[in-house]
Length: 120
Image (cartoon, rainbow, N blue to C red; front, side):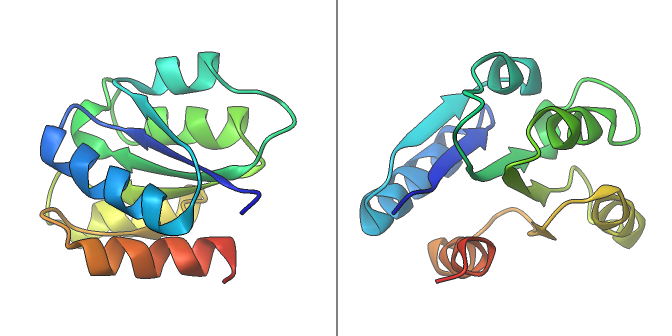
């Protein structure tokens, strides 16, 4: 697979799910504790899918999501909202998130979302 996977979270359970998924797809997984860490580690020639846990977003109203989208145009972003409010999901999709999943997530639903994002 030519894609990379990234995960921006401080949730160790979610890390374990993504590690299993990355092994399943046979690709590397970058783990980041903040959006800034992810953006600073970007390699311009690579593309992939990053899962962004809204719980680590430090700025209000999806500004961290917008930064990730702006700084990594070759990456698709799956957003995990902080709240169960539909408005947050709607806004995330409007600014460019590929998809959104609610925590707790199952390995199956994350795998399905990543398959859609990658196109396999």
